[in-house]
Length: 287
Image (cartoon, rainbow, N blue to C red; front, side):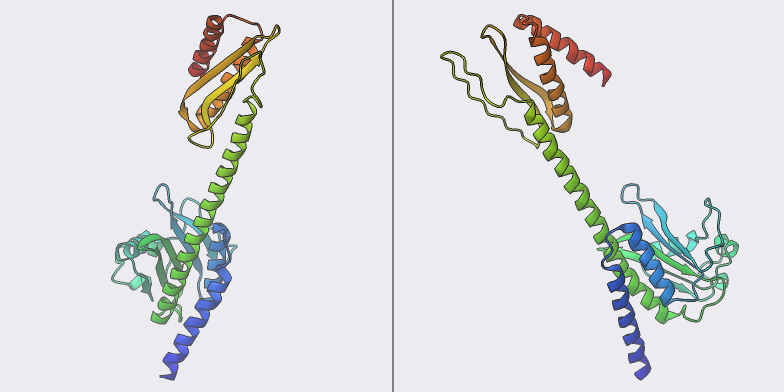
């Protein structure tokens, strides 16, 4: 019918507008605020809106964004007006739920939170991404709302699907930025580590020194050095710190510095190694 076509057209147009609005947001907090702003435009009778996300590390459900029609009305931080009963219901079924009048809804007969928070019309939709529940969108009113109906629920479910995709993209973007920063830090660490190594081998009589340095990771614990002393003497040092990566590289930097410091006093090799061993044991105790 014409009414059905008009309804479908409205939903598609609304979904497109919301996708265009939230699709460019790559910061997760900014994205969640945009989603709630758009939802309050689509469902103007809403009194409160929540986006509850599952923490990727702990798995705990945490309210990440909150919007109220009356911002001056504040709730205790210890108890936000969210119905755990409805959240559990949606989590179990992994599908959106509508309650035109939650206070008289037989599905939630024992929910004290619904009574305490005076929740009337409620819609809640899961944020699904590749069969994983990222969280939920929950909207409610303290009076029965005309657009909290099956058509509105279908629209909210569609918005939740788009929102879940945008949240997943924002998290992926954040992970890529962290990885890029880490890789840049490792490249910088490699340049710093290379600065501890000799720039060229020494030229001593008929001796020829050839050196090469490579690590399994960006940085490592192997090191070598040529320390030229007065009188034409050269101390050749080769070391291997146990392990790989940043920890081994830090130990390598410390050891390379200690070698040059103690070698300046021109001790015998055994004495030099004994001093280095003493310092290394002391450092290991402090760590």
